[in-house]
Image (cartoon, rainbow, N blue to C red; front, top):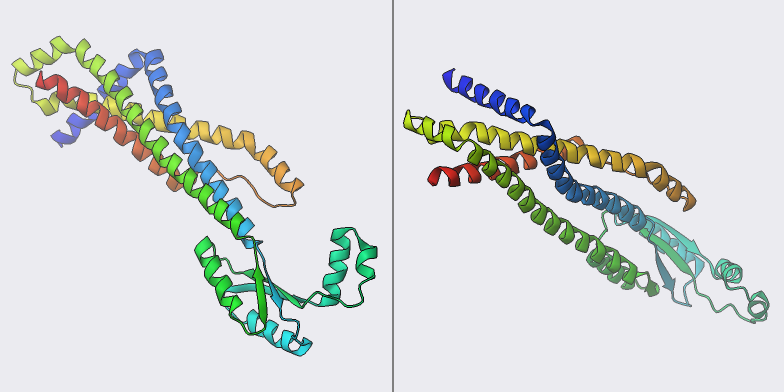
Length: 299
């Protein structure tokens, strides 16, 4: 009970010390909050980019061009077989006549196509892979599997687009990790410098406590609570800044998505993400203050 009482006294003492210098304390918390808000905002942007990429991959289709000798009966049998496969979400066949009509609409040279004596287009089957196929390697393996079917002459899909999207997501992940590491060090230094200044201001008080038998843990405890308070308040400010950013961008992003015929809605930080942010900021505040006080006590 005495141990808990000492911790409660230290926590209240640190809050009282911060309240006596509200402007300086608030500025320190805001600096920490801005430093933490940058990787948090990039994390939210990455999660939304992954949602967009997931919806784009769901619309990716593969075109199976069949051999010229394929008959309608064989095409229907192949289509029925493909629809039963777990890797395929949807499949539909396009006859040579339908393909020629679609080509006439897209190409813009109707007269030239109408003069053709024979339809050169083969049967085609449009295949939409399932959601479980979401990486370039999986797409390539699935494409090779389709290519080995007896009636399939060629498989066409935009592999370059999938690889670019995967590379972009990987690059953003690396930037996020690097930014989070650099700014975490910055937060650590901010708290360390702030607590170091506080220990210098209470140098005489610390000497007196040491002379009357105060332990290092007793001296260190209020400063640790001060550092944790800085970190916790900085994390809350970072979360608030990200929430404001998401609210400000939600309507414009939704309007842009509607112009492209998409139902995408910008998402913010979930509750578990908030807990991770607060735990990380509190840990950085604790580590920065512990380093500052320990160094001072060693002197």
